[in-house]
Image (cartoon, rainbow, N blue to C red; front, side, top):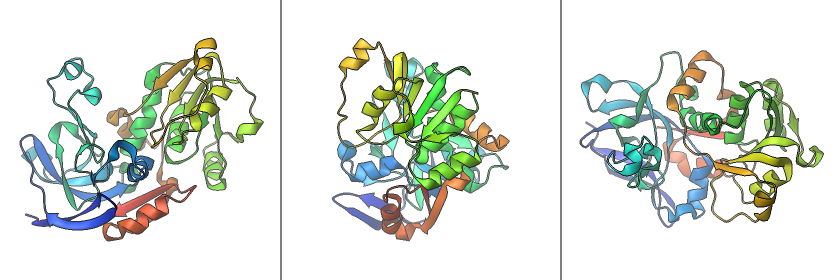
Length: 318
């Protein structure tokens, strides 16, 4: 059994600590990290979002070291919301909105940027043998991308604009493309434009798009300015889906939501089963988005790299 483990901790600054390895509690497993992905939310936590302090990381693929026999040795990914199973939201099937939830690497539950970490058995998903680690590590953000379809506002006839062609926006674009919708992605950087071109997805500058052209606008900018841009592009009685989390407040004219009778829909975590099926079938291949890999011991440099404007996916390995 592993006695000590390194972890990437943010608490009044970023540091890598070595400490006693965690132990799996009742209903939990101990997971050994194989790969982790750096998300924009990790960066926002370090900028003050949620007043976070703790071990970072929520995108991962790992291997079960300790827990129920049925899971031992399995490659796994995991949902990030740790729910109580007893509150009114859990009883209504809305575990991601549990009144008492903790969130892996975001709130009251140590994250995956560690040699080993805990996770409830209920959160685990086995990774198909045909899905390599460097694709499986995208399961959590791809599931979040799939969640935009749960809003029920995108049809094959919809005109959809995705603003923000970063890590999440590119995954959302790949998912929306599969619906047959008339899709355009607002993308400024050449790397993102090149990937969109390879996938057959039109890219545009925001200034070239007609105001009010879109039935649905999906804000993946990760910035306070994204909502105002979405208001400019959506038609009356259209819908805006918000995927961004960030430290700060949006500056936007909310009277337009009332006057234009808009629907504003928050969208967060999504279906892991759907994400794994897309990866296994090759319908979404996120691996071209990988920009760099760093060892866990070099996490400070990895996070600094990930924070550079225009950077796509940066991975951490043990």
